[in-house]
Length: 136
Image (cartoon, rainbow, N blue to C red; front, side, top):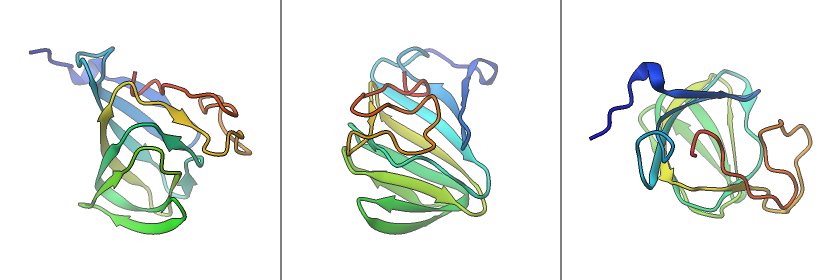
């Protein structure tokens, strides 16, 4: 049974959050990924979709999730199941820490095939489907 030591966890930083990979196919797992998301106050991720289901468990803080046009308030202790291919955007006023799990590979994409304004260099471009580093 592989052990991924804390010191060996992979960290990926974007302008809006830090993702720390606990396990993934390039870090001990064969088909699943698990990572921690730490998003500081007053940040939001880009609008996007994923081609696989994700499960987010919020450990601290709170978030507002736009899921396919529905606004959902999430607080510490809540678990959010995000279906595959549902457009989403996660924002936070106070900041949060969440643990996320999904199958891997899992590709991010722009539901309307257009790169959102202000998308960082790690975001998919137009119709591209991208395997995020924290899921690889």
